[in-house]
Image 1 (cartoon, rainbow, N blue to C red):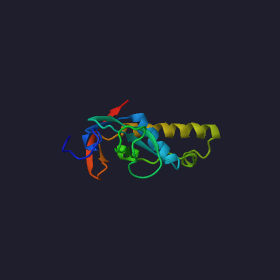
Image 2 (image 1 turned 120 degrees about the horizontal axis):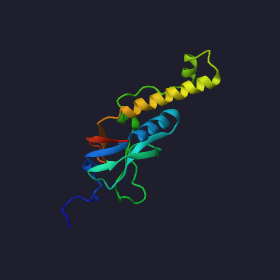
Image 3 (image 1 turned 120 degrees about the vertical axis):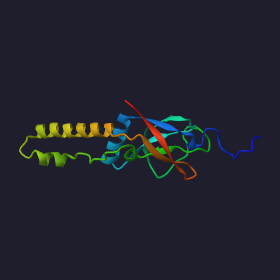
Image 4 (image 1 turned 30 degrees about the vertical axis):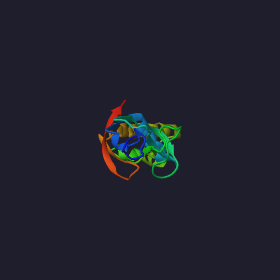
Length: 151
């Protein structure tokens, strides 16, 4: 028997030194959050290790939630707001704003211009992923981890 507190091996978020995020996941999560009433986050699930991969997740609620699928009993997942993963939080281009910029254009041209504006926005978001982010553990302690960008 160990003298350590009752914790599950690998359940301590302080074990995480870095997380890997895909540029496309960050852009998708941010766009979905800004364009809907849902909150899309990047989720890190236990058991925690030195390097973790954050994946897209539709989040309903606040804070950490119990681990799913029996990952690690008693541990909680970590949810990272996509806004915390970018340096350039420019506003998402809305259709009405694009239409105002091209008032004499036909509908098809406006659609094309809006698609171009969205593509440009997504490129800026993918290029502005941060090199580190603060995460919060179950105990409320916050620590900084490196962000490794994929894609």
